[in-house]
Length: 136
Image (cartoon, rainbow, N blue to C red):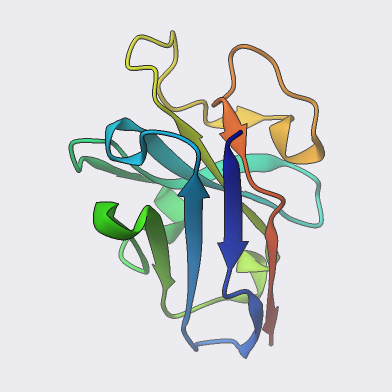
């Protein structure tokens, strides 16, 4: 059985930094793509950052230059370093993984998956999320 567990969430002042992590078990992590999604007050579930199994990265425009995604395959862990945090970064952050290199859309940008409503178009394995709150 696959488990994805996020950690490191919390509350920080605007302008500060936070690192959240996702540790996976039960899957061939080094061959899996991993994405970080977030669901904010507007309930939109968006892809924030992602790292492919071969190390390619993706960032949504609003976090470019502030967030860095990295992976440690030896520890089955992906980190999201978040700097210069803003109030609008407040959200529940979810990690998701998928080992299938042939899925139709490698990086679904917007989805309902954060709320648990997932389809075959979504990444296959999801954590339960970690809350990040930015105080302005």
